[in-house]
Image (cartoon, rainbow, N blue to C red):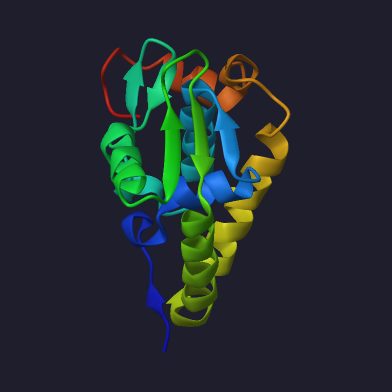
Length: 149
């Protein structure tokens, strides 16, 4: 019998990098894509975003990405704008193995992976500013500043 899976087990940020062919240029693009993925699922209550100046932001993003960098699964280049996020070979192997295992062990994993793939394919050629204009992000920006969305 398969079990349900939460976003912490899914390593959503690392998997999203993989779905973007290994690289995302811009923090805004990364945050908005994660937000759109979160909103594409029915069980989105377990992952909160905070409404900030440019819309919804993932409050655990920086610490999680630092952990991936410490484990040599991702490279984060914040020395210039826009920031660049890349998955390493080690990170890609981890994501591939995790995906294979979770597809066999966890209910709903394939749907979550498809939702992530859809967000990535829609946003790959767009900038964070373009994604920020999407209706779902605009609705979140209407919420009071620094509230959970």
